[in-house]
Image (cartoon, rainbow, N blue to C red; front, side, top):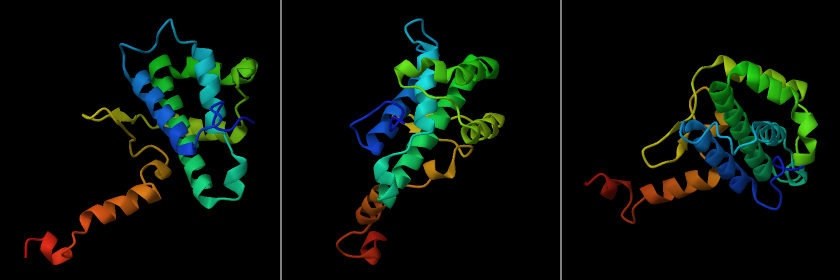
Amino acid sequence: RSSGGGITGVSPRVKEEILNVVIRAILDEDVFPSPDVDEATLVSKLVAAAQADSAESKDNSETAAEMRRVRATAVEALAVCSRRLGKDELWRLVDSAADVSSGGGMGCSPNLRWELTARFKDIRLPEVSSDGLVEHCSGANAVLSAPRPEDAARRSLETLSPGGPEKDKGE
């Protein structure tokens, strides 16, 4: 398997952000669908990313958690594709993902098929915030609604002032 759906040599965090850029583009009706985008290759890469594992994830729990976020983000991208292309067309492309394997694709595992079927039943989709970031909906895998450990640590550091909590409240 190719780690991260053919995106090699970059961290899981970067892979997740690349997938968020893809989601943002697919959500934009002026950008997708486009004659410049080979939908079969796109779906094949997303299927591979949704099933990605990494050798490091077996040894490093942080990397394993990051790879879960990558896989969940790829599932969200496929959910957006399903809405934009139609479920029947998306399933046709998912079923033919293994045939596009020269582009880094792989067939859809039974576990992914089950996950996609469940996800497609929920009509909620990610949205683009006013600052241009992808906001995942509550229908997404719960791993996407949890803050990353490094983000949570930074937020708690930002909320503590040098004077302590009382100074923050203006007391």
